[in-house]
Image (cartoon, rainbow, N blue to C red; front, top):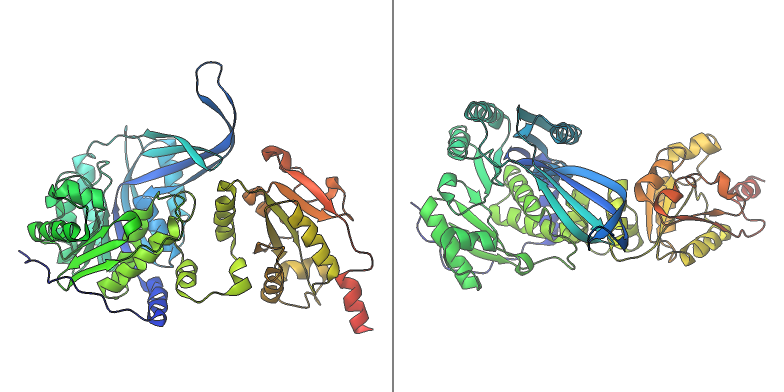
Length: 496
């Protein structure tokens, strides 16, 4: 039985350089996740009328997105950090189970063990969203314990898989995968293999997690589990200490929403202030916390450092829309000095997240594209016009290999990194993302801009992606050109 934690004491400030290096170490982690995987569906659309059948809004559906949730989202967060992950869970023999299996199996560095139970529904949460607001959530699930024989098989697989990883995570959403004696048997198997266990708990009885190395309840869950007040920092520390003592936990990391986190372990109590500049969506933030802290422990970081990184990661994901993840680049950016214009340059997934944040604010998204090799006044003129037709302008930039295919082996004159940096330095440009394809059609389909802009040397019919815009009510605009301005002519003058 553990005794009470030492008195509260301030945590020594960790230099930013050390934290940045700790972030890079997360990619070395190897984590086994066992628990309730589910499918998160997002249905986006517009509400413009009320149903004549009942006083409810009519959602005109524009698009649907599906992604792994629950234990699957923990894995998604781990892979976003570059870590390796294995997942052991149970799905139903239904379409949602098949979709979830494909989504998890399609991620890099993941070894999935998704067992199928006949007659069981895969847990699915469907959120209906308009104008950035969630209108309704519909849950489809069976939360009864999984078949006992299937539970035995799950434990055998996890007991074998834990030897190839460094930390086991139990992601318990009380959907039946970790019911009964499954959690205690998994913790015993991990400890027998010399592995540490991190638990994201649910419910009121934490005896089933006894002996776990770290447990991550939120403030409400801590109150439910202990029956103690949690309205002040001192009360939270007292409740966390009581929980840790009662069940022999190595540490208790309490997530406190807008108030940050509190870690209580054998070395004392440490408070981490919230690091979210703005909150858009708290969905999946707990999954991010357990993923980052587990990856940190697996990478050999001290628990307080891993907790600090998980706190920063939580601040990142609540600033995004939907069930989001914190990538290594996100963490490094949050820790690093301002990068000026280079903050505008991002990968495709990050670009989509940023566009969704802007769209949630009701801003119109503009999109244009090109090679932008040797930026000249004609380019600047086009981009300024484009920015005038929208609230935020995204520029799709052809990669070096794409430019070579389009312009010949001698092009581009400048590499994609240099071209992106120059574009990002313009006040008219809000985001730059590079695409490898010959055309930006897939990028347009992904970002769904409200305004698609090209130069007046095109016609609407010849603009790539113009035929897609009617699907979501977008428009095409043609920008005036400055005469005598072209990269080809500039190159010819240089050579001449």
